[in-house]
Amino acid sequence: MKLAVFVSGSGTNLQALLDAQATGALAPGEIVVVVSNKPDAYALTRARTAGVATELVEHRGLERAAFEAKLVDLLERHRVEAIVLAGFMRVLTGAFTSRFPQRIINTHPSLLPAFPGVDAPAQAITYGVKVSGVTVHFVDATLDGGPIIEQVTVPVWPDDDAAKLHARILAEEHRLLPVVVQRLAAGRLSCQGRVVRAE
Amino acid sequence: MKLAVFVSGSGTNLQALLDAQATGALAPGEIVVVVSNKPDAYALTRARTAGVATELVEHRGLERAAFEAKLVDLLERHRVEAIVLAGFMRVLTGAFTSRFPQRIINTHPSLLPAFPGVDAPAQAITYGVKVSGVTVHFVDATLDGGPIIEQVTVPVWPDDDAAKLHARILAEEHRLLPVVVQRLAAGRLSCQGRVVRAE
Image 1 (spheres, rainbow over the protein chains, first blue to last red):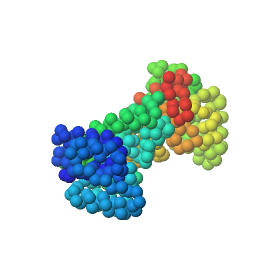
Image 2: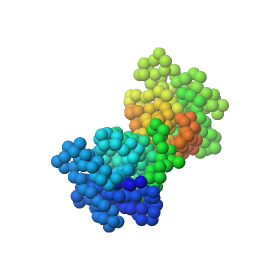
Image 3: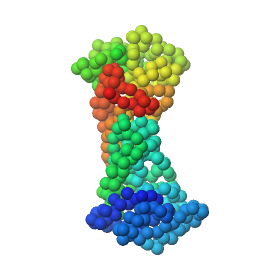
Image 4: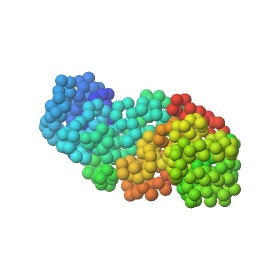
């Protein structure tokens, strides 16, 4: 299954996927293109170093529909079947997500439905939770509201700040995301309503 | 520290507290009265069996202020210093909770802030989370929104229904609640803003 990874930043989750691919752990999934909306995303360098094609689609100055049309065009060109959002900081509309039902996944640094949106680790610290974690979920037109595929917890310690907590969550994301991507590529995930099963 | 436990139902969390008290595990906390708003709550029988005083304050036909005035009166009569809500199904107003700042605790069957309010295990099943748990928190005028003292996670399995998940959460509640009540009674809990520390 041909995969695209969408990025906006440093790309540590992308690196975890590229490392898994290098050892054969994503098969039958194959990352065929890395797509960034930011020209200076370090994730693009990681992709090139791994010998994976890159595409830049800047959102600045474009209507959402025009931005997403460009994405659809390049995905068709690369014959992409599923998409992994790995720190991609643009919201995708239902017009886009409905083209890939249960074929777009996202990783979010909280135990959804707690702390959706931006700066989830900081939200968790401010709220004062004792447990947080990572959620990998299917993407639909809602903000961080699609069916949950997997969740892994991490403790929150009394002296944590957002950066310390985020680092602890990222370490779990880097382990979980390749596992879920492989299951998706192997056709092992199924949805019954909002409940996702891994077979 | 003299404690009241407020109940409305079968009282399994109360039983966990009474069992802890019987072994000395709540000291310096002492449950001096169990208060129910329901005459047929089995929790009242559990209290009597353990030799603890009971009080019935029915909310039917009373304004909230009159209901809470009756509660305050009996708490003063029993010289209660802190309150544990253990399946107590009435919302307490700020007029009541502000009399006992950081002296009222509640146990809730979800990882707050996810799934506040009633039927939290059913909410979790419907949402499709992979992890849930129990939250013990201080009670303030918000609904299930006070500072979190402790959280313990439980897995949610694909074949769970609300009853199975609730049973798994209850088992953790019965272990966690007496530990937190002892810490409260020993003065070991402190709040810095919303972040609660146990010393």
